[in-house]
Image 1 (cartoon, chains in turn cyan, yellow):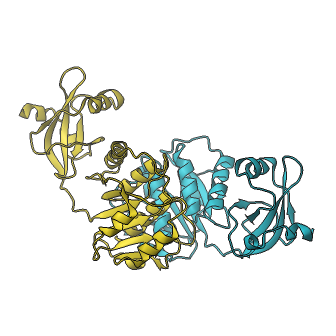
Image 2 (cartoon, each protein chain N blue to C red):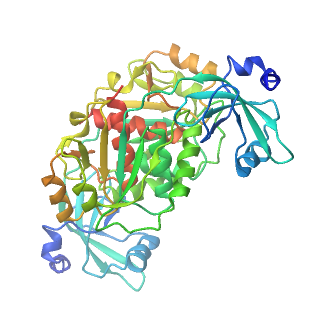
Image 3 (cartoon, rainbow over the protein chains, first blue to last red):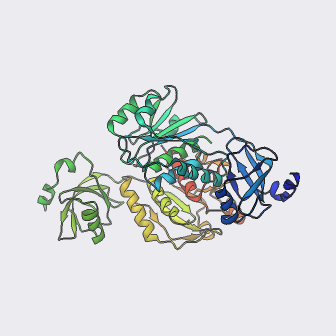
Length: 251
Length: 251
């Protein structure tokens, strides 16, 4: 198999970054060979038009980033011959975003941006005023994967099953801070976060939380009501602003 | 005309916030009467289905927020009878976002979110790698107005004419800080901003700035290269992250 690796243009395999990054589920080790699903092969060959011998970067969220050489395995399939590691897997602080599901395309934006901004867990939370959409987790996961491939992230946030706010709060550990992004929150977010500690944030639906939900949240140990500024932000804007503020504070 | 005002449901005119906010260009003073354009009347009567006597909030970016009573002026037109002021016009720190135009729908999203996050000027900047789109300023302005109406902001960011990066830099005052959001920026943004000072930010196109542009920017007095974190953010994400970090730092 070493001749596979010999095919890799040395400059691509060493200095210059591969132009394409691809998330895979397989374990990444030297000389591993990966046959991606048919639709991925189609994207690489027919959409991106990558030639055989092209070096791509692979990541799986566990083993860092690896260079792999694209080879043909039959007419419509590719084989990815893993050569060497480009980056170690970084330790990511846990950053959980709990959000009330919103309509497309806003939820797609939220997932894409939350991935770019470093969220590690995306937890749909059902509130009184949530206009519950039929969530399509596999679709949201595909959006998160594409965003991770684009932004040079080495992991993909986990899309978690939807949970009712009451159940989320009932199960919440007292010692785990939950930043409750509240239109009436007093404290600025930055006063409360201490990156890179594990963190969770909760943003409400269009129309906000119901009064009884706000009361329950404020009564709960571990819940910290925070403000995102003087304006009423849309649900997805609030999520991205909170993630950005945390990212900014963490650096 | 006072009987117009007498029609206003007192509870709506005083305690409870009007449900609808509307940007107008007219001067807002007591007893002013405003006949909005036909399409606005259509939106109020046929889309939002507001009844005569409904109290709406008006703002024009200069005179604060005013309560006005919706009245019929013929079959398809409304008259807005201005009654009293609800909020004073706040002093907004100047926050200029210079951005390379991107394709729809991302540019629409950028304008909407930048409005929610408090940008006061949106300046399209043409760079080497900008895939120049035919900008439609009136369309972007409509998006900014709707976002301002939604987020309870009392002003609308100015959409400025597109300018080439070279011309922007040539005309840039040496003493005016320009935060250059650079993938290779060293300093975190928060280390450099001191809200509520006037501030300008520059984010690049998809594909980033050309090397000669980066060099020119770094050589320019007043330009401060800043980092938005470890990942490669999409153009619109970079803009919103920078605005959010500034918003967070300012509170």
